[in-house]
Image: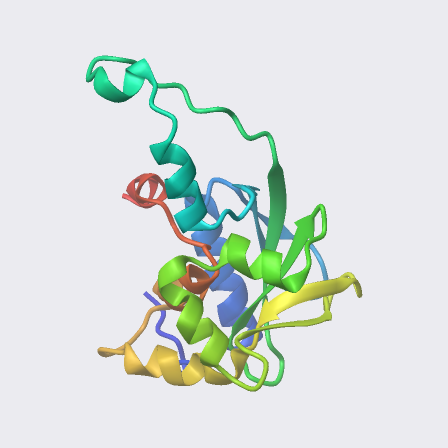
Length: 198
């Protein structure tokens, strides 16, 4: 197996190989053909309305239903048909030489709603405290020129190095990156996808 030549930094060729290796493991992904390699992962996320937890608890406590006391009842929750499609485009930063994730939502969302949609609760404080504006910023998507959210790559190399325990193979690089950077914006590899790799 080929090791990354200057971990955590990737060459264009190493990035292309790493994307080609991880793409079959992600059922909702595709390699986009362009001048530079791009791995696109598309997810449909439930965009539930944000409700004050205390208010919801107060409302719930006043409405008992027979199902609340019946352990064998099949409880059907109302369906929320409000979904947002998020495209996660992973490209190699030419200046930082690490992967960068650019995210677009359909329908478009303001930054606070987008942040709440994609960033898992346990990452939110760290994501807000990183950098001047937080770890998620807006820029023009390098391939489309359209506005996109992105996780700034300035600390990716340091974070990747902190996890290093010997040589990192090109084939394993994107799994490591997804576990560190991808997970911070809800871009996880499912156990089902990982089992397919075996």
